[in-house]
Amino acid sequence: MIQLRNLYKWYDTGGQRTFVLNGINMDIEEGEFVSIMGPSGSGKSTLLHILGMLDEPNEGEYCFQEQDVFKMKEKQRAHLYKTQIGIVFQAYHLIDELTVYENIETPLLYQNVKTANRKAIVADILDRFNIVAKKDLFPTQLSGGQQQLVGIARALVSKPKLLLADEPTGNLNSKQGEEIMQLFKQLNHEGMTIVQVTHSEKNAEYGSRTVHILDGMLQ
Image (tube, rainbow, N blue to C red; front, top):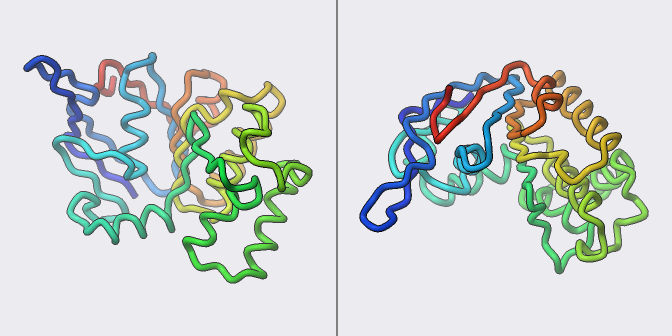
């Protein structure tokens, strides 16, 4: 599903290159559940953002379902991102002006899902995440944990082929965290490919394999 070849990401600081990613080569098969681990500043989130087409490397190749992502036109890439990929951000990235319901509904609007279908799908996921009572609230009226649940619900509502999750349980209590990881495991069994960045050994064990990154290099 994914092939990364010789990915480099750097920043120029005072005439020196500071490498965030340093020659990453990686394959991810369809249906895998990959956990990426490494200390803070090791390049985990940058790698995830490149996989999610939110960032570009300075050098290297990224093929997604046999398509060269960085040779695509912007419109093609945006379509691919909106229809195939769900992302759980560490910092939520909910839209403050939209209610919980509207935030979760947004990916379905991108996919032109009909109104009646949208309502049924959103109602189902609100129920699944036990946030029906919060549907008319705005993100600023929610706790960090509630915002995290809404972010996860939004990422999953369109049933993406690839789910990218950056510390998905970081703001949840242990019970909620375990429920989310069990849900990820179930979705993975149903065929969803998942890549998660985590500091938690326990969460990493839900994956089918763990990849370690240090100083921008896979170990």
